[in-house]
Image (cartoon, rainbow, N blue to C red; front, side, top):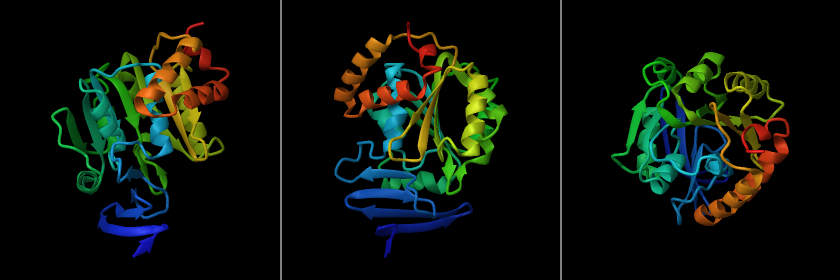
Length: 269
């Protein structure tokens, strides 16, 4: 059976709706009952980050060159970002919070999510999980990734100001929040989240529109002391491009272009 311009190889249902896996031109993708892809994997190169927005989320590396401690990921999907972190940062420890147990099974069965002692997966509501640990895990994580969408948009439990206050509390002093936003700058939800991020993170926030997509990746820096000048960032971007085969120079150029009023808050003069 063909669907979304590809071959349907799996369909199942849980309390949250449909889960579909489609293969098209050598790419396997996860769908939640609608055309947008939640995750994708190149079958001939499973560790490559196939989706533009997931590659854009790696731009944190421009500002923090290593991950050798704890990171928290909210929203597993097919596990592309989680696999990338495990592969490239052997000293990292990951907690992933995924609302749907069936999605965890799919990530393992169809997208190669490994069993790894550094990885702990928690089936829970990401918003509740973070708010409940804002005090007990204060200043615990170097990185916090949010990619929690269903077929309608951002999950309601993370779309409120108290949630972002809790995120800020969980981050170390030099921690970075990386969040995938969807729908473009004209989307009221995006505008509201942007205001919350700016307030909570004292305007140390950068937005990276993903070219030819509706996604915008936000990077919020927690009491961040700038480490690099623009010249050093450009050098870093070239080195990172060679190492990871990801278009970091393009991301840096777009970050500078789209954040004229705040870019200087996260680089050295």
